[in-house]
Length: 612
Image: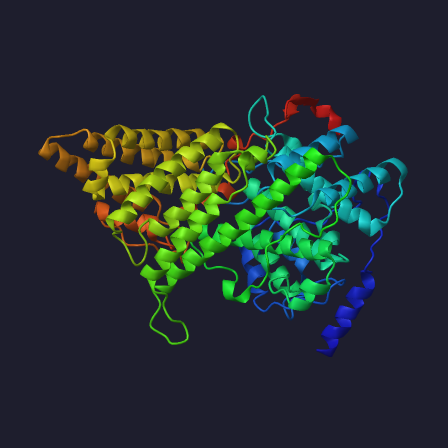
């Protein structure tokens, strides 16, 4: 122990808390920290070495692992992939001889007028999902970065954080810029690479715990949009544990009374951004939550009492609307968390310490609360026209997903009641229609999650049509066929930009064709044959989605259409894992990060040489 303490003191002496750089010209670090190649053996050893997590006090390098000496910065870097990608989790999802994805070169800062425009784009498109940074924080960081570029004035460490934030905002804003030649603009990944080169010092020597958390969340936000560049699951986990280390998950009365309103708002906003990310991932992937709701005591972030800077009234109105929309998203995350908790609790053994919730009583309580949530969403007409919050389809999609979470087949109701069947069928059809609208408008954010939601909704329609005579008699055949065709066409459209959707598209087209043929068949023998065909196709689908990774276990394949309910309800089902894996390991020809001569941002044209 004494020797380890001496080694630690020597390391701290070699790395001062305020590192200096020999040159900051051009806002480019002189040395770039090595980035992990993400190899399975390296990641396995890294994760195994940090089973016991110990976090050092703030304003000093954070070390993870009682004896490993692995810093938090190294863990974050291991979860970020910038260079060549390794083999996928599910090898059948990509060709063996497919070359690894080429990495983009680091980008320099664009002209100032373009930077200001990208900041506007960032707050129009991306922050509605995770309000990690405020507009004033970004504008200050951009101003400091450009001030040093022009005059060389600025504090080294403060400048590092500002440059990192600037590049991350540009990378996120540029990600959805259309490329006339197809694919995505390489400038987005170039900005990401430039930001990553600053990660080690920004995280290791951060003067604020909140700044460290904000940096990790910005990385997670980009990886959510571009899964090939990191592990969203690991980054979300790091962020959650940072929140717990800081104490953001439990707000005391003294903190609420004595902290400055701006600080209090920032803490709450960062906590709920992390909480929302954890719930989205865990519910989609069918994994346990990172923290239970009983361990959380944090009011929703509100802007009352927070000092405002002078800004145009129209922009202030849009920002206020976005903040209200964020609160609605956070409230929905809490409702969905409650839904999953209650459903899981029904499978627990009877225990005095962990009693089961009365499911029927709870059901009568949760449905009105979910409806009230939908009734008080901020008016889409008051949002910025480019914001996703301006689309009613976005809110319809969220409401339909939560409704499906309650009424689709689950562990205590593999065969739901007729009422739940109607609720699930209508919610599935609305979810399909909403995702179709968002896809057509270019508002899909996390593609693999949208493919998951769309495919599951389509399977729900097929399952309910085959299982419920009441649905078939009270819902027209034409409307049912239309929902199936819409789902198939949207999956096909998503497969053009996300290769992982191709398998879902093909499987769903096969299942929906058999279902349509069955709906249009009046001959009893032909109907029996159609059912046999569908059962065989369901069996093939289950075989295709069985995981190849050791340790993942799914249900035994049974050639009965009734067991489609397991696909809709099973938390251990590998479908989500397959999509997430496919998104993290895309084929290079489907990425389209090639050079381009010209592109546009919200109708404003820029040439590729403005990065020189």
